[in-house]
Image 1: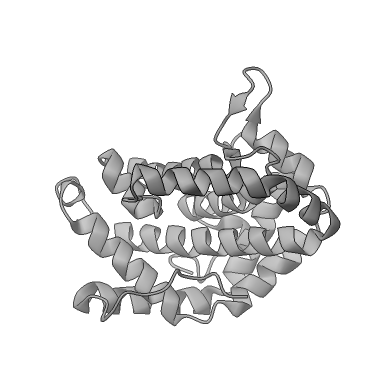
Image 2: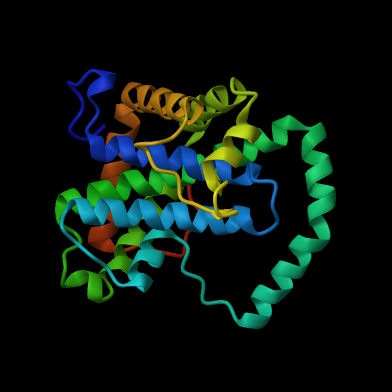
Length: 248
């Protein structure tokens, strides 16, 4: 793991600890029992993760650049989005009942999203450390190039070791539904909120701490991930890659 090969697990750089926190927060979003709020919350968490990393380096990006780096930029037509919304409404009752019966499906969704956001957040941290993004390049096409290199490098990695660790973490927490609701719903205003690493409850912090421990133990994996990113950013991806790091 970058800058932490000689650090104990509790001395992970704060910037990478926040990457882990946002990955856990993103992984909890499938558990939100409100139609569309899960997708909205996921987008907000991923974009907040990007903004936090940029802010740490004194950078502020246009909204489009943030969305690109968060993997949430969507150029679909309004009609296409409307069809997706209608399908989600129609399937929501079945999905809710089905998942109440099969907890393992919730775990899989949590693992997949956490893995994606962890890989992408880690590589964005690496890209910023390398200086691949600055105030000027964020205004141009650099975010697209960095994101393409991130996706391509993740697609080349066998993420099963990471996903297996994540599966152990999430399966051990049977109170995830309640914790996800607390993390994302604002009881005072009845709306949605983005989880804050400084003020979250013990369960979310525990999941994050255990993920940080796993990251430290798999630092060789992340060193290899960095090498793939460096290669792809230099040469560019040879072809469009499938969505990264979702394999189980």
